[in-house]
Image (cartoon, rainbow, N blue to C red; front, side, top):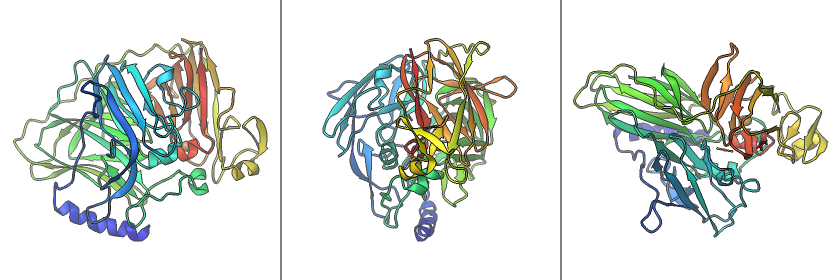
Length: 467
Ligand code: C2O
Ligand code: CU
């Protein structure tokens, strides 16, 4: 690994010297079936040039032969239709992350649909209720399938999008590659599961080591950031630009917030309005420099006819979100335990019986929610339609977790009682307690889990029922 990173560094410097030679965002509609607006998404093995050119292509699994998969794009209110064709040698599904859609379209095998077997297909069809930046990925054998490259972006445009000069989609991903740029095929070893998940050694933006662009000073960009990694929490810094967060996890924020840095956990998205302020001839950069030396960059060489730098942007039009009735809301506390350093409590429920922690580790289960590892017949929360539910989540583990609720968005109840932005995924760091509140507005059985896929498969996966 060490050698590989060393090599990669050198090569990337050379590549960067070539300036602008890298392929950027592949924004294209998914191939349609027979000339209509339905998308055909084939999940199948493919080979892509992830690492710089002198490395061999990487064998991945992808949608439509590209990594990330095709950008699927529609207007708010349109009907979305996609056929998943399973060209893999194992079962799969597609989960449309962050969409408030009918339960049967949520893509959770064994819960909302039957798994799609190799060679078979499944048709997804639902109305696009919300505008925003969403993404799609399998919900079967998630750690392996997402880590191998199965994910893509779904953009739903507002009826009246904000005025910008250009848009960029930047999908951040994290790969664990061997020296010949192939994926390490050990998915879910005990160390990954019980620590911070499957962290990689090579970070990509839109499937390449770097995303390079050229814009004039004063250019206003809309930037859609997506974290498609299964474990890495990106900490991004913005240089040579004024950056405002205008939406998080697809939902607009009330007041655009000027940021100099931004934390983006697995599965989270952020929409920003970015004005290039660096001088002509300089570079504007969005970078993520990680403790382990890996890094991601979007770099903009500033060139062309300057415009005046603008004032703060306006808020995006909001989606139709429910009113939280916090006062009489039921509280359902969630205690997160387990993992290296702290461990599980003495006895934990797993598959219907109480087990000793040691036996659970043997079985590859390292985490528990409320003393329960993984799923049980009984949901974590049973809510009636329209009810507001408050879930204070206490992270007693030594690791960060990216908690995701399907089917509805939630808001954080801040310590002073104010409400945070609407989100579908929240990063909770060690020893934090963070309370979320949501209106149970969408009937069905919905997953509630850590999006660090190695944690998800080793205990941090549960569900709620709304009737
Ligand atoms: Cu992004 Cu349960 O998923
Ligand atoms: Cu986790």
